Image 1 (cartoon, rainbow, N blue to C red):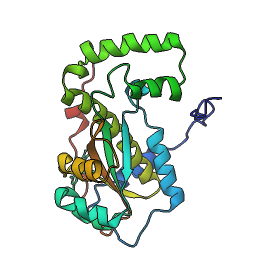
Image 2 (image 1 turned 135 degrees about the horizontal axis):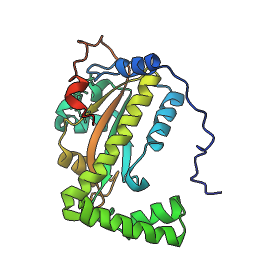
Image 3 (image 1 turned 180 degrees about the vertical axis):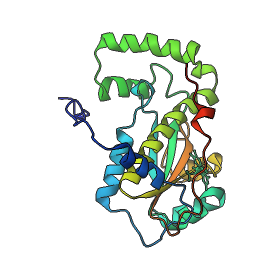
Image 4 (image 1 turned 60 degrees about the vertical axis):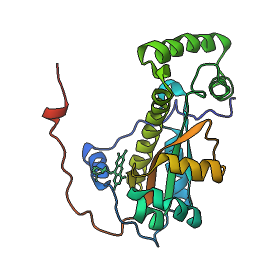
Length: 236
Ligand SMILES: Cc1cc2nc3c(=O)[nH]c(=O)nc-3n(C[C@H](O)[C@H](O)[C@H](O)COP(=O)(O)O)c2cc1C
């Protein structure tokens, strides 16, 4: 059997009430202050990581990685360049930097995409040729993500955001708090975590978004406000 297989065909049909599910989603809020003494257990964090792995990505290409930044010194090193993460970098149980693949990696035939298609998914040659045609059309015509370095990276980053959302939702189910954070300077994180610390190769990856996870050290300061569905949903 393919060692990368996750048994999902026989997964049990969930049976949560709308109230239960929506309560979890209401419990999640953008946590500003984390409790420095409250750490996520290994068991719970492993499950949150598995939620990341189970997230869908376009074409199943998974053009992302994450750095789980637990090193206190390194957290302080990026703090001047992460204005939106000041409290989380000091206090959050876990702090994650998502990095996303650049254009060279998400170009069909790259070593990265070949690895995913041939080694991870172990697709037959016929399917590989299907992907060549479908993805080339998608990436050079329909969505034209090959238009620029930026368009290709942003497409990869979109996939990382889906992964992040899966993690935040899973975390809320465990009563774990979170905050997605775009308040940082990607170039500086690439310099520190990529070029200096060599946690990733900046020829292939760039910082996309960050995520703090832990437990709240505050009560949420306000109830949520959202546009009504009449404003955001078009029915026809
Ligand atoms: C991609 C993304 C980036 C965000 N960046 C920040 C940030 O840098 N700092 C911050 O305090 N909150 C950040 N937030 C939190 C949002 O402000 C928050 O989710 C939104 O106001 C809705 O509030 P709620 O999450 O409490 O429901 C971010 C949220 C998302 C999804």
